[in-house]
Amino acid sequence: MRENAHWAVRRLTLNDFRNYPTLRLELNSGPVVLTGANGTGKTNLLEAVSYLAPGRGLRGARLSEVTRRDATPGAAWAVAATLATPVGEVNLGTGLESGQDSDKDSGETQKNAGNARIGDTRRVVHINGQSARQSALGEWIGAVWLTPTMDRLFAEGAGDRRRFLDRIVTGFDPGHATRTTSYGRVLRERIRLLREKGGHVDPDWLCVLEETLAQTGTAIACARREIAILLSHTCEQNHGPFPVARVEVIGDVESWLEEGSALEAEERFHTALTQSRVHDAESGRTFHGPQRSDLVVQMRSTGVVARECSTGEQKGLLISLILAVAELIRKKRGSPPLLLLDEVAAHLDSEWRVALFERLSALNAQAWLTGTDAAQFEGLSSCAHFYHVADNAAVPY
Image (cartoon, one colour):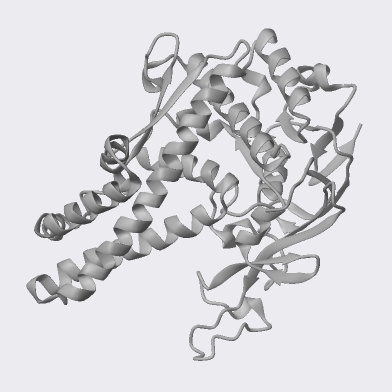
């Protein structure tokens, strides 16, 4: 992993991305404030920046949905950036490559993207002009975001919280994303065999799958648990006026890790999978494993779980967590991540807003913030780039 002291986008270029036919921003390493009316494309700019990191972006949208609606038939979206690092500048590029013609056995990409079948799309990545795997972006950049849709994180299902935690873990270990993808694939294969083959499934192959699940699943649970512990400690040390969050991952594998070594947890997981074959086949779901775990957040001062806290307390807990993640990444990787904060300042009182800006300054992170009212960001007037977003453009002011 490369040692970076400061990540910052110095140049951002968009083509056919959401509402932007083209856009180019020249920046320094300081915060970026985007103001304008609702619906003008402020969040779209944050989403574009989020695609510089591995993953599905801050909206989790399908790749084909990101291309501008009025784009020329066959066009595809693209995001390019020049990123400043202590070891020099790096050029990152990513976008949609469509035209995967599944009728051809060779699977070669067609030149005319308009001929692609629906869903036959993939994301391509270039680093300094060379093709690269998406996971390689994580070696060059980290990004953490907070959006209005995340306000429901504590009230919605455990799956959303697991994905939230997995994004955090991936920020420290890009290989975590590979493990979770592989685990999900093997999980589905085991259930398919149990349901389709019943008692006729090859026991040796089933055992191989379950060994893989036990090994990979335990590694996933270990990584999640370690980050949860670090987040709790960091929140306690750096909370300011924000509520202190106590973070825990609960589940059967996590309980086994609490009671013994990782090897013992893996063995118990493997035994549980073997013993639950009939139950899993009948239900169509795997009863044991980290795919059933949940992220539990509490207010340290009261012990109240986040889902039972007030809306304001939940917002404070989220901010506390995001700032703790940024601080951890700074300590672990030597550089704070890009912070993408969508409409965060609008819902904070003056004390919390001042505290947030002070924390951003202390982190020395390039933060991207959006809002409808420029007055909300007066505390950043001496160090931030301000842009007014309207008419598919971002104009500095």
